[in-house]
Figure (spheres, rainbow, N blue to C red):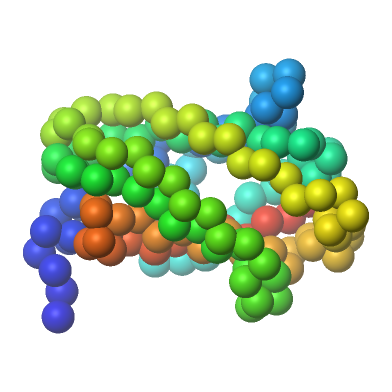
Length: 148
């Protein structure tokens, strides 16, 4: 059964832009203005291979929401050929209605000994992101990564 509140939040939600930076020097490695939160289709991102060499990556997203959210949060799974390699949890908190917000998070890399090479990962990694307001699932999107 559809949830009216979740539908209202999703209708008024837009991911305006997103970038990934080397967290050590702040250099932007990838950016997109595509709304990667849209759930209907699998999105694609072409990310430079050198991102895999970073010790940590800063992800910055800018989003707008018409609806108030009390506990906006994301759950992300890194899927490799359908198998979950990693799970990440991010909490934003309260979202003011009719607001635009920028949210920066740091993602620590796995130890170098556990990293797979870009040619193995290329096209085989899907980032599955679930958008929540507290425990209410608002949307789920998938982004397939290609390392260039």
